[in-house]
Amino acid sequence: MKIFICAALLLFSGVALAARPLPDDSIYQLQDSFFNQDGEAFQLASRRGKPQLVAMFYTSCKYICPLIIDSGRGVDHALSPAERSGLQVLLVSLDPARDDVAALDYIASKRKLDRSRWTLARTEKSGVRKTAALLGVRYRELADGEFNHSSALILLDADGRVLARTEKIGAVPDQEFLAKVKAALAQP
Amino acid sequence: MRTSVLAFVLLNAAGLADGVSANDNYVLVPGGEFKSALKYEDTQGKVAVASFELMRTPVTNAQFLDFVRKNPPWQRGKVVPVFAEARYLAHWSTPLQLATHATQQQPVVNVSWFAASAYCEAGGARLPTWGEWEYSAAADGTRRDARSDPAWREQILGWYAKPSNAPLSPVGQSPANVYGVQDLHGLVWEWTEDYASMLVSADNRAQGEQDRLKFCGAGAIAMDDRENYAVLMRVAMLSAMEAANITSNLGFRCAKSLP
Image (cartoon, rainbow over all chains, first blue to last red; front, side, top):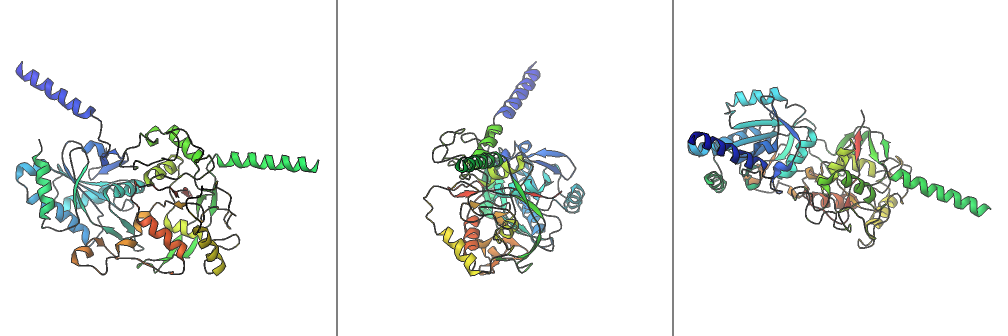
């Protein structure tokens, strides 16, 4: 009986959470469709529930983009296992023309990303523009197909509100940013 | 008699203009290679513009009102702040009513990039790229590229020198350029799809290690045509904007790629 009540309560609180409207300053207000490296469609609002690291990249990028993955990893490594399990990572491609699901899947495997927490995602060109605008990432496609882009790692709270950002990219995390990640993960 | 015939013709013309401007009205802009006033490192300023369609005039208050009626999340008071700051459509008297100083045929202003993009998408269109906008705006009534003509430059700068506190003229009052496009100069600033990519204010060449990492790939772009102040002013203004920002002299028009 007690178990049953607990289950009912859990179910109820789950429903209540889902029904709570998205804060109006959440970037999860964006309704464009995305696909992950496993070919599953999703909207940003489905990422609600856990704090999230977000960045933009593209798979054919030779220089900074591997560093963007390293940056996410650097944060991961600086966390305790319990903290790490509470954090999700979302990397959105700037290059929808070339980054199809297969390209994302290839990089996820090559970089041995934990697919239960890491998502490499693509959306259509107009969705890329809007995502970049929401994240404050500026980019331009170059004649040779590379992109000129600003690199930032952004921390979102469980409802998709921007808590912090860093443009210090690399395997050694920005300590100030890391402290904010840990603080977000310490929230009940 | 002659007077009444003339009056009839004028009336008819006015009626037609109303009917036409109530709908989005596109003209074909044939593509070509073009030297942008922005000197991109990768192309040395050369931009290949594919043929596309561009709205003849900027989107009006009437057209935008029709859009927000059909799309309530974009009404003033309902739009979320991540998509438009609080002064969004502040010149209308209510969320669904224009005002004496915001008339049907004036270009809509006080709209964010997100709202402008949503308007265009609702019509199966998009915002023009900066390259498309600059390419179209280089033309005058007879030439596809009038920019080297000092008289043309003077005329455009003259428009920009008008005081900005005067009420906005209705759209479609200026002469059409060689493509049939009007009001590219002299009425309002206009959002472009890639306004955020001009990176002018973020010239990273003179800064330290950390800032060099801020931009991946071929660093900064520079201005190639220092005489073309009208374009430079526009680039500087757009580069300073965030996508949720609005101003009282920034509107937009839409474009379509050819199928």
